[in-house]
Amino acid sequence: MLRKLGLSLIVIGGVLTIGTKNVNAASFASGDSIVSMTTRNNYIHDSKYRYLVTKKNAIAYKAIGKAPDYTASVSINKNVPLTVRQTVEGGHIVTEPQSTDKLFLSNDKQFVYSSDVKSLSKKQIKVLAKDSKKWSSKIGKKSVQAVGYYTGDGYEKINGYLRNGKGQKKVVKKAQLVQKGISKFKLRYNTTVYRGISNKGLKLSLNNRGLSVGSIYQDKAFSSTSLSKQVALGFSSQCLLRINIPAGFHGAYIDPISKNKGEKEYLLKEGQKLIVTKIQNVSYTEATKMYLIKNKGSKVVQHTTNNVKGNYKLITLNLLN
Image 1 (cartoon, one colour):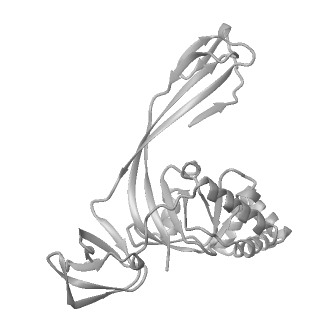
Image 2 (cartoon, rainbow, N blue to C red; image 1 turned 60 degrees about the vertical axis):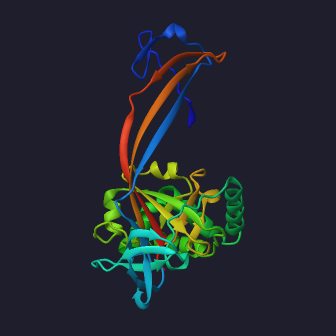
Image 3 (cartoon, rainbow, N blue to C red; image 1 turned 30 degrees about the vertical axis):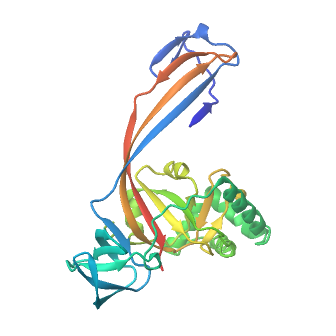
């Protein structure tokens, strides 16, 4: 990521400090600029076991070694996390929670939630933006204004009302207009969106229960998400939600009418129930190099900052069936 910083050069006592290096003021002239280049390396750490979560009632069979015993079927309810003990031809050997009985579950994907990432191409994002503009032209001026209000300073008031049921009449009306507006947007693609959230916010949305595969996540408020992982991480470095949204009516892509254009925001409807289908830990290192660029374009100063290290939880969720 190459990012040009529009920085004014402020010189005190004839010396400018860039990072930890001092540069003589005589080096600077009108038109000089500072450019920073940031590189980031991510390392994903998977859990010991792989899990599958049923999205509908499924039939499994008792396993004899690596093979199914088709005379001994077992019914598994939907939204049950299954631990994968072994992947075999035609399916998986799994166990249910609090059970050591090994079962054979076919690899038919219709029975389990997918944790695969559905990233949109640049062309698809352009189509999504066109869909959004067309949608916003049909929902009425008041709904468009309400969405704009939400993306500005109004999100705290609106979400506060949705979470606790208390709010001024103006806020209640705005919330209703947003609800009405986004309910009419149809997402044409299966899409993965991201949301940065604090540990505290995660705990509240899990109803103060522990985080595990199969946990139910619900926020009574609207949830701002982004098509961009980088944008979402800018809102919290503790937890990153990776939400798989199927095509249909689940919220709206509001970037074209947002007061924060460029965040690629998809606004998830209020109260949407999600289920945790995967949990990973991510560690990263980030290094930033800064350059002083002279007016003629020659590079005269390079400074590399100390590496920044950190980690966060990457939590994959799917809309609850």
